[in-house]
Image 1 (tube, one colour):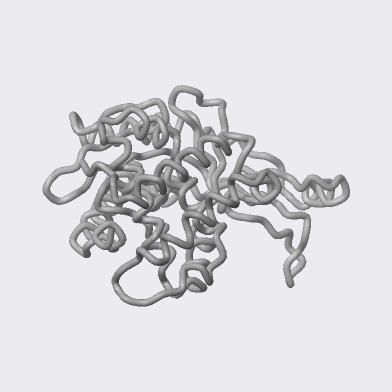
Image 2 (image 1 turned 120 degrees about the vertical axis):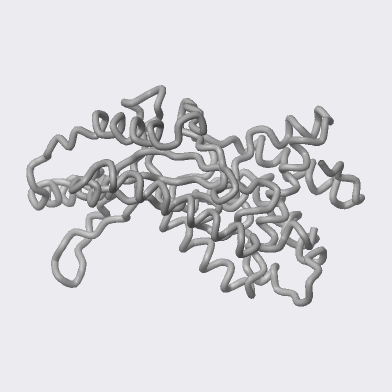
Length: 307
């Protein structure tokens, strides 16, 4: 578990940055002057500092930054005010441009590209690592308040479109998620990210254990859900010292189980990125609880099959 808790070695981080830079260079070179409108950004576990040795691929967002999508505040007065402030909507031709970006990636990386429903997967080699690439556009969620200069404030995120459903909007807030994890890790004496990495590796071991009970319990548990579950645990329960994290696990995981098992406390848990309820939408409270219970049961008796 101490091995699982460790951050990625510098060499692997360098390869991840090199992968991002290579795709950025390819897009800019192929688009010419239009390339300045696109940024390739690290996302997911690599951005959050919770990537593990168990699964060392990276998520990359290719984001158009000279236009943005937005959503208005729910309050009618604030909604009308923000609408008046915004300029007229401009069709940015996003879907056509996304197809162009995908064509550029395929032309550059050739047989290394595998098209998946939600992303393009680029296989790694000796100098870059496996990458899942999704094309999107900046997204702003207006809050209905103003800043010191009288400008409407917003939460910055990205809007992604699935390759199989180009009209379906997937909105996420990577910077807000990173900030929530960073704040919690700081309050936890830099011991919450190691525990997140441990639980992600536990999930990986369960998925590849060959045991049906473990595989089913871990199947529908994404990394972002594990991050949200452990950040919901009070930071003081992580306090400890030394290289062994077992005592912290004995406090943190049972507390997370208690939070999820109690409907009232589970209803207050939110996604780290967008302040939306954690359960009731894309994630199931029952699935999260089953994963935590099964994982902890096997950890307690030191009986987790390792792949």
